Image (cartoon, rainbow, N blue to C red; front, side):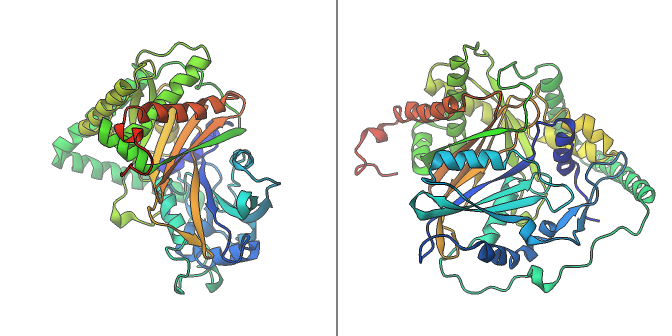
Length: 476
């Protein structure tokens, strides 16, 4: 059986532990008008999607159970009732169809949970955008795929050429495989899974004995993770309060070339520059709220991709996390960036990312009930981090659908319990888009954070001599 991993199942458990946690990821892809003008029809979108979903069997599968069992893990089974019309719908924005309206619609779209009795994804064709543009919104449960995996899915659904050659892909209309049912009664299945867990524990013990250095490094990383959670918790902040299901959403755009110029002049990586900009924005938000700036900084959970080339197009979650201190109390933007560069290098070279991975591996050796204690209440707890900031690289060449070029992507990151703000970053074809999701009730001032990101970019631009030249003189 194709069962969920411990990390996959954690995203189900997070929703079960708190009504405010909505564990769907995705975003909105915005396209130019079709060559003949306007948008494709909903029938064309459904037909085009149906012709490609055969490459993604989980998109026609549902969970074997809507909740995690005490002894057995949920697994994926084919959905006999699958109808693509239940997952692909159509809306039209009223005029003028500007950014503000699209962001409001996106917030509402991600304010609702997916139906666990069906395959865990939805898409919506959006018409009426300014300039005769159109969009496709994509929402998928985090237990099915992580951020990088979702990019692989989008790559399958889009074309690299406006007039691509015909390609034969397994189609839904070719007939789905027979539904995946277990031939064992539920209690027998649980016994077998418990026995399998015991076998994995024995194998893990043998591996540790044969690789003592690796075992030591992983144990040290796990210990650091536990110390951060139990002894040195993330600071108290107004962004870490109980949340509801309603969401707000804003986007900020910046050319990738500008971020690269900042990196060359000021040091670090593009991701470090983005973290510095987000730090500036969070500093502004807390200041506007008359909140004392924590001297040790706010702590960000920064997911790290663990996929290699062989894992391309595979679903499920293959990530770990770094926990980065964001120096919001530092007034100097250059020093803020330097501190972040030092912190991210220290974490990477120390192998800190092995801590969360080890915790997941330990949970995999035990019954699902351990996930409640070991993962959902530890790795995603308020004491461990204040905010999620995730950076997912997309393709740097144009992509097309129905002959229309995709112009940009607005990414969306889910919010765990007691985490009122999250920031997702997506780069595509030279443009970086920051999608800021927030709890509707506790963050009425999300515009302050969005403006703070723009102001943070201006602070760093002022430190780069290249930006003092006229646009015609700048060469990145």
